Length: 213
Image (tube, rainbow, N blue to C red; front, side, top):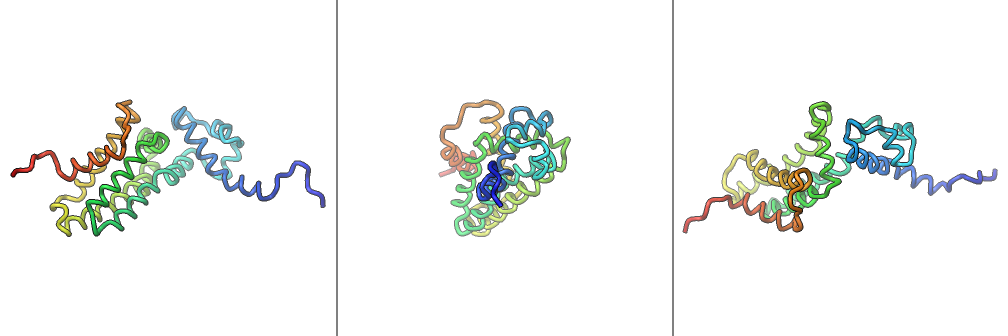
C-alpha cells in the first residue's frame, strides 16, 4: 500500500514524539517566567510548544504536573549529584563539601534553573502539594546526603562537633541568599561563581573569629 504523501517518516515521528515532553516543559517554563504560574494558561504553553492544549494533556494533566516535572528535570538532579559527591567524598569531607558548594551554587546562579524554586516559593501557600513535592524530592534528599558528610567529618575529627542540622542551614543559607541577591534583588552580578563558592565555604569552615596565636 503506498504511503501517504504528507506522512512523516516513522523514525522522524518517533524522535519528535520522544522530544515532546521536553519541548512542552521548555515552553511551560518560558510562560511561567513571563506570566507567573497563576496567570499562565495551558493554551499559551501549547502555542509556545507548537502543540494544541489537548495535546499537552497527553503528557501532563495540568500546570501542577508541569511544575513538578520541571522540578524533577532541572532541580532534583542537582541534589542527586550532591548526594553522589557526598557519598564518594567521606574520606575527605572538607574537599567534598567544597565541591558540593561549588556545584550547587553554580547551578543556582543559572536564571532558568533558579526560576523553578522561585516559582515554588511564590505559590507554595496555595499549592501545598508543590511545596511537599519539593521538600521530599529535592530538600530532604540533598540534606540527608550533606548530613551524612558532616557526620563523617565529625567522626574523622575534620569538623568540630556541631549540630548537623544547624550546620546544614549555615551551608544552604548563604547559597540561597546569593541566588536571591542575584536573581530577585538585582544585586551586582557574580562574575566568578567558583570563587564566591570558595569564599562562602571558607567562612563557613573557619567562622569569623580570629585565630589566637
